[in-house]
Image (tube, rainbow over all chains, first blue to last red; front, side):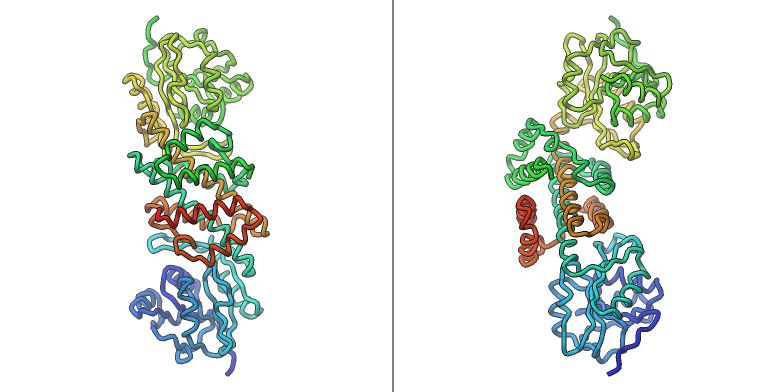
Length: 267
Length: 267
């Protein structure tokens, strides 16, 4: 079978119709590419996204050999679903397939029977239904060992974002670890703070300007160099008072103690 | 001695000339009040701020009895300095004195010899030299047991901010505890994330859009309800892999474990 020649603009297929697929598909179409096909396990979901695009078919069939050829298959599913779907899917030989996950290795896409060219197209952002995202400012981390796919991904990413970088899987893992601290854990601390405010009949939005400024300041300095608060000041009275105030929440006490200790370790 | 009558606009004195004093003094003057006097232990610092204002004197003398009367003395110093300065200062009898601290109790201002009316004027924000702040959006937490001072502070705060609230000292303590989680600890986690990125030759700004979106999302939902990441998904493989990657940083390992446990506790 002949290798599919790359068309310009690109012909794309999405496997998945969630938030990442939706934001990317709309942006790609706006950039002039053609989104040819949307797959979802639930046809209604695929159709819903296809209806937001032009000239786009919807399918719940994982046999892509029977569909018109695409320049690139973009797998945009939950990490857990990627393996299952890859095991079941049938691709035209020599197809190009990428996933959009920050935490999955590229190798989950290996299907030697189809001689796939595989890669990663990871937009470093979180997407939700009602939050518009300016994709132009979202860094896109690419991985593609084969130069032809690398060139294609570079072109595709640069058509929607100003910040395109190549990153090996080992680096993407480090980035993901850093994101767990900066986003997942940060969100949890904001949840604890929210809980303390609400429990004490204080409006949860009272701290918003302070939080925003703290975050912006951390972007313009090494965060450790602009650390404030009782721990870095070594204010033992306040530390003890705060631990006392948390006496009904032993887990929060533990978190308070450990993070204060880490701040004081000069980190 | 007669009680100083309240003038409109207000005549103000600042004890302290740091970032909080600077931002507030400039905003008060812009709102039409008169900043009459700036005290600093170092006269040059007081003069520097006074020069940014009109009709403002600078002093390093804590005997305010010898100075023209003011409607309000605003003590804007580091927490540690407030007690020292209050012990040394001489005020006209019946003066009104507030501090601007979120963590100090109002009672640090007690000086029975001068029959002071005391209170708190706490802008819930962090101020730095090169970061302009829109004070109109900064909530100002007031405390003033005496109705006359309460009315004066309400008027003063409302002249620079749209968000004025009265808050007892016990509530301000809870707010401060919540801010330690939401700001001080969050900044530390951003520092750890920054360190992981830099150590692995990844640009520290790669995560900025993701962090900004995470924070904004946490403002529009209860943060616990929008928690993402390996801990809340129960992804044990990733958790183990991340702990392994942190093997040279036992303190960060501990933080990772404890916060993951707290997330999984359904908090």
